[in-house]
Image (cartoon, rainbow, N blue to C red; front, side, top):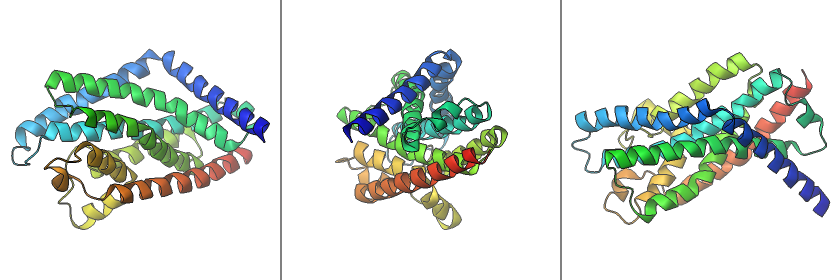
Length: 264
């Protein structure tokens, strides 16, 4: 049993290291990860803050910063897991899937490796926050950063389910964007959704990132007067939903992906 665990752990670490090495050899990807926060927080966030955030009762840019931290990790994992489709089409994963290791070790290794690029984006968020003078909230921002592995897991599990359904890289490229954009705009990453009603409120509850963002803001605004104004659900509810999503999507997605790989 110990030998099996050691083998699976080594395999997971090797797959994660492979993805991290690929990221380091692709400086364009790292630069884009740093620039995206500038586009969203600096340009879009700055415009919204100047034109629409006057009567909110809280610092909109600080609110958006927390949403962007979650968005960067969550969507980065969806994109990273989607790259498995392209690797499979190019027969780069054949050796992995014929090796005597658990399919879950392969998926988790890929998830850990993809997290690296997502975490690089967090540096860009901090740089933009410093330049724009956005208050970081002291230790509260540290607590949010400690939660980022959870956001990576949930985003990665959604990516796993996605690649289990999609069969070719072209569809994956288009589909991943269609999966990411609704999450970004409906889950409250960029704008408040506390007063959403009807179909928008329903869609917000369906977005998996909603619960990650709400947990992050619950941690960041804990003990502040803005907590009840900003946070939607209890942290316990958010954690429960996130755990259920991760387990269900990872198991089902891995089964579907392995089955589609065998049927090629």
